[in-house]
Image (cartoon, rainbow, N blue to C red; front, top):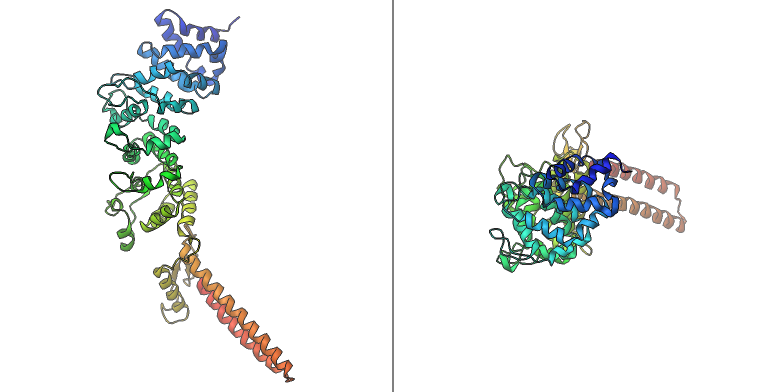
Length: 455
């Protein structure tokens, strides 16, 4: 004998509209607490809910909400994603300028995109929705919904923000990566990805997050990197400004760094704010990391001074995931390429020389302190904690330490040779050994002082 809840679920296909409405409204809490109720009789309640999407607006809204919650189940997801008739029903409604539940449909599509069966969206054709698109491809129509429908400009009932999550999951597939980086003839050969990039600084967190994830997933396709990095108005996506702007704050940079940065980043207002969502910042940093996969990408990011921006992001954002992403990116950008040695930054060399002069008493005066790579020497104060490691300064210090170690080792070898030569000549060696050891001790003390200056 069915329980009361099971009987309530059965009312979803009742012939009376009011009873269906009450049933659809009252089963909602159980879509999350007891989803197994809707898997009875070979998913009959799910099939009922799919039919209710076409019902009156209040019933349809509750049915869509229920399916959004239940799509987390693999069996239910399969039932939804493989139903061509149901998919066409959703597309018909979401592309309508008067659909009151378009946002709920966008959410459901985003959940359905978790199924690989949804890849057929890239080859699916349907009737052209007037006033929205001139393409008969379903994916093009959804892109036009997202772009033209931002902030209710196409449908006053919807903003289509959740379609960005649908695009993000579709971009995980090779078909999706190809779609977003291939010019579309119906729209003046525009790259679809360039329709998304302007929304990286949109007011909606949902839209920004979904677009950021889409860009990241497209960047997994290494052959598309030249297109993504190119600023050519005819064939390039010009992706970098739209990734760097959200992670850039109000910080000031040296003039030589600013001159080398992208034009979009050179004249930012003093009240410029980076994206407040750490998850979105992390996604953009991970996209930059993907773009360093090729030598051309690494060189470009170095040339346009991405490192100072990442450094300031690390300093300015109190989030562990963001800082870890910054550290990983810095390690790649600042390392030497195989087969070549990167010259030291003149500023780092000057700082090291100033530090040595101050320690020798030739400059700076008593108690003077010089900052080298985040560490402070000679001021007697507690040293602040290092943040982003300045790898250029660290490399300079390491090289100097190695040089001192080589000098010390050479002194020992010279002393040993002199001692053996004296013994071979039959001369007394005790006095010579004593003199050599004193010289070694003096040299070691001088070198230890220099090591203190470095570290």
